[in-house]
Length: 329
Image (cartoon, rainbow, N blue to C red; front, top):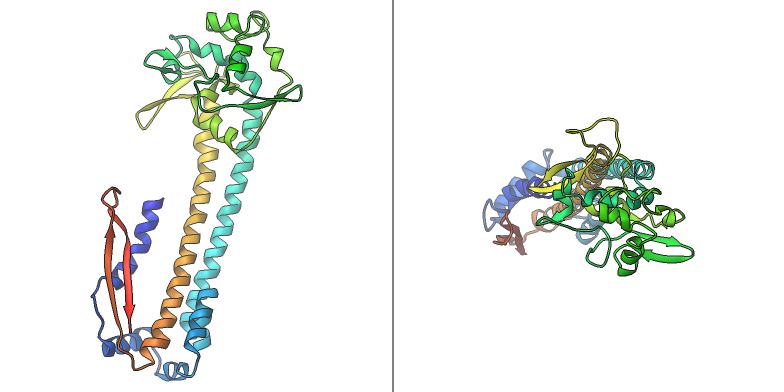
């Protein structure tokens, strides 16, 4: 989305900025008079009496206001229309993104739980499990708890706050009277082989990091309610591997729908809203520049030149980092 947005805005700007490195004043005056003011020079003449600085200021506050103040109603209407349309577009997609956020949070609350995570985690320690590749590092199991992992689940139990990425939790979870047998046998931790109810009263902190983590990181995978038992299987298993940039990711039907439908749609909506904000800033800048050209250059006997040069960033795949733009008059 970012690269597309960059090129959309650079194309029309480039036609103007790189057409030439200096500008003949008389040519600018004739061209702008014809292109920007298709009527008689009445509008141009009238605008000479207006305050040029005020026109630029108005254009910066509300695109098109400076043009309307100067008597250029058509261009003012265009800038103003773009402004209103961009804000409406941004509001629409922000609201749409918020709706998807509410949807994926409700879906996660229904299909992912800490109790499932406590019970199912040892099940994925088995080398024969179809998602073992995603849960291991060079054939060695990476347990989703303890101080060796960076991400965590934070929960409150008996008025105390705990995190799963601590040695305290590691020893607690693998204690003889909790899930030690299940960890050694690499099977789900149940009442038959342990005591997963040790954490039954835990209240998990459901913040942005949790809702992001349960779809993004494999250490949260065991919490989904369809990783061990499900209605439809893949090669006899509920869990399966899905490649993401050549990296194996543990997946289930519920997790895939959560991550690649609901959260993906939310992110896309917010990206569209961000594009609209970029267009809003560009519209302000273009409106100011148009007011400047009209009031300071065309309507006054001024020697005007502009100079441009690209800014390259060879560490960036798009190369072009920006544009140097200078004006003298």
